[in-house]
Amino acid sequence: MKFKSNLLTAAAAVALGAASFAGHAATLRVGNQGDALSMDPHSLNESLQLSVTENVYEPLVVRNRDYKLAPALAASWKATSPTVWRFELRKGVQFHDGTPFTADDVIFSYERAKSDGSDMKTYVGPIKEIKKINDHQIDIVTTSPFPILPELFTHFNIMSKKWCETNQATKPVDRRKGIENAASFRANGTGPFRLRERQPNVRTTFVRNGNYWGKIEGNVDEVIFNVIGNDATRVAALISGEIDAMEPVPVQDVERIKGASNLKVMQGPELRVIFLGMDQKRDELLFSNIKGKNPFKDKRVRQAFYQSIDVEGIKRTVMRGASVPIAQMFPEQVNGYAPDLNKRLPYDVEGAKKLLAEAGYPNGFEVTMNCPNDRYVNDGAICQAVAANLARANIKIKLEVETKGTYFPKILRRDTGFYMLGWTSSTVDAHNVLYAILSSPGEGGRGQFNLGAYSNPKVDELTAKIASETDVKKRNEMIHEAIKTHQDDIGHIPLHAQTLNWGVKKNVDLVQWPDNGMMWRYATVK
Image (cartoon, rainbow, N blue to C red; front, side, top):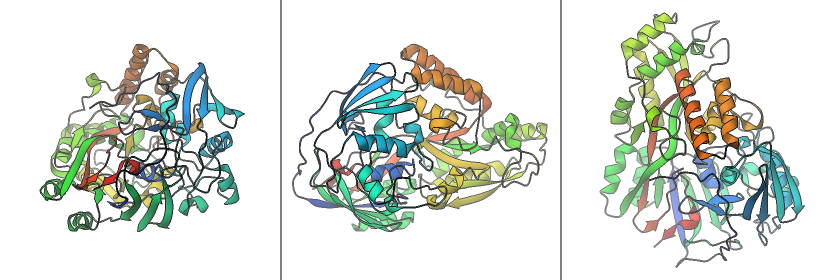
């Protein structure tokens, strides 16, 4: 199944109609291993965070049930010059508190999303300025031609300028510093659901927005989002009927849920790739027994780590087949994927030991590895398997496996020497990964999630050219060169793409997006 981007997409105005119920109203009870860490839509660029908050807040451009671009708070858009896009904003839209949505809210949200503390800079980085034409018309000026700009906006969510100013929430909640404000626990969007009650890491309740400007296709009028961290407890809650849907399903429980008469497992390809990152900037490696040196600056060490990891073994024993080992930083559904480059370096422990000895570490070394335990499928077990693999090459890994509530602030501050992370290309285009993960950290969100500060001037140069290139053939050739350059450097260590597994009651219909998004507007409980 492909989800390729269209470089020249420009949507026409579409009237989505008034909100409507599909049959009787119902409650949807969802169980997840983790929680959205804040209700602030600019605070954390993380899949579950976006999935939850984007039922409350909306961007200018949205994905529809088929994961194709569709108008949202922008009714239409078009490029009026290589660096200017005219957006016609939707009229008659209100925030949940009744405040009208206008161009001022878009401009305010842009300034907020690019400010210190925001985790969403990569989505607004190409913007030079936003000019207000009138209350429902804006010109977005980019620093250089950027033909996929509308596709970048699907996670640029709009907040109420008035509400943020009134509630002292003009700056984003900064997860790196633990700074919170009213937007941490309250919400005022334009979306199909309103926040009713927030109990962080326990339960959050949402209710249907009766004044929603668009169409709500499902019949759900209440969503109770439950945090159930323990896998066995979460599965038991689904089987007993305490919840109606859960994700992720632990891979070892997929067949059990499939065998239940009243349950089903929704499965599909995911756009996310799980990878390992290494600090390549500091002169001395953090949290390591090697003093005065940073082994990861040596390509031979990075290659030794790569070749020590048995990804096929992880697929077989940890993922139970629910993963696709990969050599690139994005899966085949993403525009720019190069089949000829999807060949991993061989798993070779003896070769890895030789490389370490050549680099001056014949006895290996010790380093701390940071991992979450409530974000990906079997994430803690993946890290344990990686640590066990590396031990065979005399690399001692001190695992720090923790909830994403403490994991993200740490790695986003770059207080890590070695870490596991997953990345979803939300634009379904290679530029998203190149800009956010592979580029040198810089202005406008460039390299914002390049947490080990990998840097190659060639990759930076190509990424800038790829952003502006409209010739598809030339653009894909440059993407290919950038990927190959990064692979040759072993800038990161890709592991695998995962398969989505949701456990759902058979009387519940959901739409499963390849970015793991669950939009409640499509949910129906029969």
